[in-house]
Length: 470
Image (cartoon, rainbow, N blue to C red; front, side, top):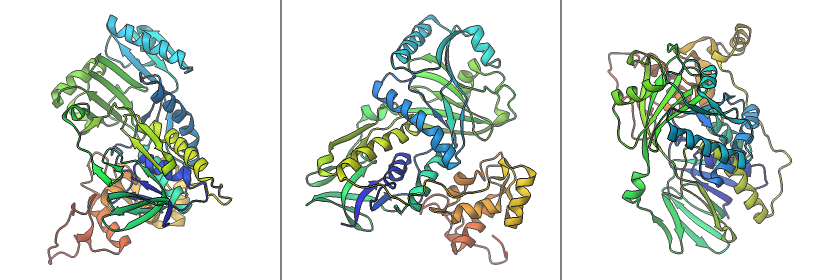
């Protein structure tokens, strides 16, 4: 066998599973079709860590509660930004009050602590900048925000340091059952393994003849509702400090989330596609004086409300699949990874590594350092004194480090998502050329070979002979 375990998919769940399994004496590989891992995570590096009180699904609630508990310790160990800020769900009509009461009663039955119903005046004390008159609020102290891309990278880096082989740019084409294991064919190689963990089960699944690509039905496509996002910078004076959700009806709500590195992320979920004017109208009900001049970015993503199911019905054959997707997958990932790991290691009867390294390599983040720490970093490497991204205060030293680390960045977006460079108010107009030059130098490539995010996303196609620089 080439490997004991093959993890298909290098998203947050695949990386978390690889990390948990890397604690054991197993030969493991992760197969990912993209240029980089964690491609399933939003470019805004902030996600809500739920506590299980908001969902009607009891299984998802239990997994969220476990994930919420595990994440704080994980983030502390990996030096990943994590902050408990609390959450408010607010309503201003009688029907909404009844729904909140149902959610509260459900949370109490589930044994979720630090959650309470409060009246409008108490909501105003917690969030004085909220614009609307509130009848009732559901307040939870458990909810947090986390940097999800940092978390996924940390999972992968630690797994890689402990021997997991990450095979990027390999797309799974076929899974075939063989005697005592599986043969997995990609666009580049064929591998044999004892166990397959399929985290891309919505795209590809196994049957006796191999693999069948699933076609998503129109009804299923309709279930993936658009979420429109508005990224607001720190100039906005009426920022809310908690995760605040205001529900309009069963298909429409607005959620405001503080961003880890400053500013606010405001999402509008609707069953219909909305324009910027529509979104500002919805948001204006909850937030005061939000106008176009302080908007940093706009984007849309799917809002996946489905459940995630770990299908281990074929564990005796060595096959586990992760089916479905969920808006809270960042919260669910640690719990799902632990569940998968416990199931597999019991079946494989494997032993823990004695030399497991449960630590991420140290790194510098200039925007989080005081002057004394900064001077110390510059003494170590002068490139930490050369600022590449003025908006987010990112140095050349940080960019070089993110390229040279385990599973280092190989694309412009890879650098941006690891360091925050290019995500400021200028949207990379000042630093893009510099990032491209650093990538070309560090990867020993031509500038024209550097891509934005994938093999078909070249940024510079040719150069003008008369200019020495790009």
